[in-house]
Image (tube, rainbow, N blue to C red; front, side, top):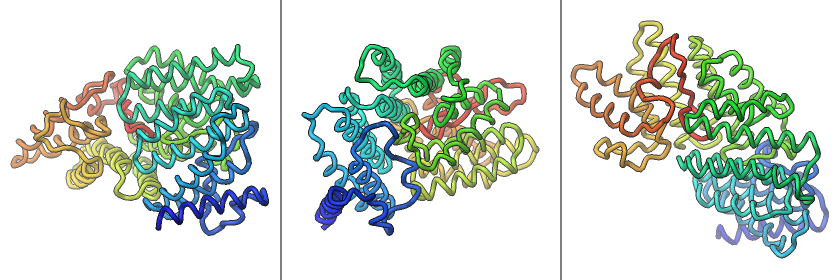
Length: 438
């Protein structure tokens, strides 16, 4: 029944688009959200088929309208039908741009349902479309790096970031590559900021800073660029500059509802919606680091609500945000010499449950842990809550040992990440896009 319904949807979408050329948005108002184009839409100058773009909007909006496995499967079937209309044998720019855009949309739906490797497969296919728009290929490479960082494939992410930079070397000699001066400069800034993020994850601050230098250009410092550069400044204690960049990322993404600019195209964990959530989450963490706990709580609570609305209340990303909130309450308790043990414990327990933390009986170094940084941080802080309770000290020590062995951050030890000090220049920042501690 689900397959039949999905095929009817896809055929109906194709017939309507071909017969009338009218936007599918106007034909299916009950299924489509006006905000769908924030997360994926066709860029100006991309030369993609208008019908393909209409079908993409239709598929994404339908999948998200119900947020069910069935609606996502139907959305993917619509996109598969769309993809089949653009032959792999045709190498003109319009056909390749259309295929690339559809593949980006498919990767986004797969990412939202947790099928990360399938999403990666779709994104890798785009790199073989050599006649497609440079902005689409940069977006797909950015998404590949983001997903590999999320999956802790750090070495792969570094190789991919280097390949993204190489796109611009090739563009200078390839007449088929899109190059419009300002536009290609903005994309180049994105590629360098992506490399900077990878170096930051690897703990190489000097290298990261060298790539973020280009991010100071206002024309390119938006979206993922502003967020990644802000996180670098935040992690090195430059709070006021970081705050400006977080606010810039939030405001500009919120204002750019159409996302019709090819230089801002993005998908998966690096999409506009993900960036806005992550930038707001980072801003909440920063307010906590500044000691503005009321503001921090209000901001992080707002992020929690939006994350639950987007992913559902049982998604691991909710666990990441809950960990940020718990750490903020921990910081507040230490700075104000107060106690919030019950609040912290409740938050840590819920976060670890959503993050699917493995049993403490599984050795931390050997455990297959998704979002390892966040799980280790949550358990390390939770261990402190247990250790101050006489009858739970042993449990706390066991949890602490597990967290220390699981922690793999290259810039900070777990003890440094949990240290609360006004003198410390090492500040941990949780990147909610990739669920990593920077």
